[in-house]
Length: 512
Ligand code: FRU
Image 1: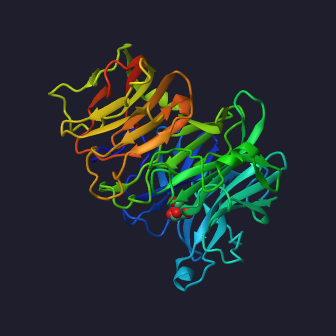
Image 2: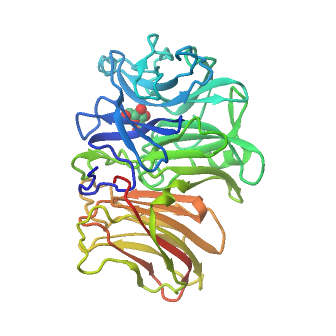
Image 3: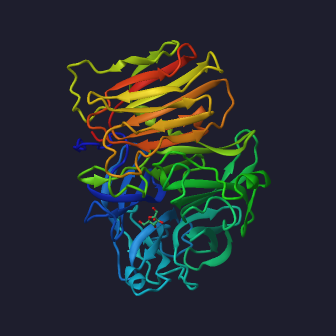
């Protein structure tokens, strides 16, 4: 596969061509991780939605498959999920085997044009050949929009093992609705959540809902993920979450968490500008036990305008989510899946130097003769641990990427504010949108350890920061004129911070 065009991600999933947005239908089945996605095959801007499709054995390398779901007389195919109906509760399986079932929103643009409010409703499709071909269920829709709720979409279905029922959560304007079913076809409304909690700076979209055991505590809590657009902490689209309990009918917020999500306050999964509509894979084997997530690495503020030619948008790296209880409250920690490690080449131990103004990481400074046009490069992973030598005086410090066009991207930590930041204001082409680089992205620190840890994954057009073991995450994209082929550490103050440990890797691209 070529994948060497300008700004083409080398270690992230992107469609071969045309427009992509949300990840959809993520299900693990028979050794394959399926990734479907909102796709418009006729243009590089959003339009009548289809489900594009890819599979992977490791969530790192992807094989493109033909489009799985096309629009039909009921509407375009908006976001949704997929499950393995192992017990064939739907009766849509074949030869005694359970089918894969995709649950999605039909968006009927004709009805919308006619001024109706009930133009979104939920439908299903099934596959009996490992997701290669899909048939729409003849009795669609399975959840009609009887109350004419304008935004009524993005069903995430899971098997509620404790109550032996299917559970559907989807977004209804400013809240989430919960429905249950014995067979994925007949659905009963159970309850709704959210009107008076979290942020409502925009419409709620793309929920996820799952149990998570609290690390080290042996108790289980339920997590509700709610994407919202706009209204994100640094502008535009972003994803908030809630922690509570589920009794089979109602989601009740945890008492302490409740305090953090009243009066329009929210807790965010990722503080960056470019992680939206992310959800988790279903049917991950219990022997694995991980909660695995991927998000759309863009933002509705400028997704249609980013300077790529053949295609638009990429996904984040796949991440493992864990629930921790900190002194500040329950927090989801995100870290790149361990499968990503296979891309590491040339491990470089970094020495424990005091960080001065700008300190080039020698192994990552291209010699003058290096081909800076090599689009297969520019992919790195860093694992850094910093110790403050002078807490009072320490200014911001972190990592700078730069290139031979004089462009740069900075990511790091500001001790005086106790915040992480990501600065793409000088990172290359920012002119396509006045929102794109209007400010520096900031994120609160969620840890009080003496050392500040930063795991960083850099691609041609993105940076992902997993700080303090994943307690704070920032995902931001950028569009430099030339590949960032040089990495330096920096500190705004002299003799105030030390790199106490560090490793740096060049990453192999995934498309060979
Ligand atoms: C989120 C979203 C979903 C919708 C889809 C349409 O980005 O707006 O709510 O289903 O995109 O493409």
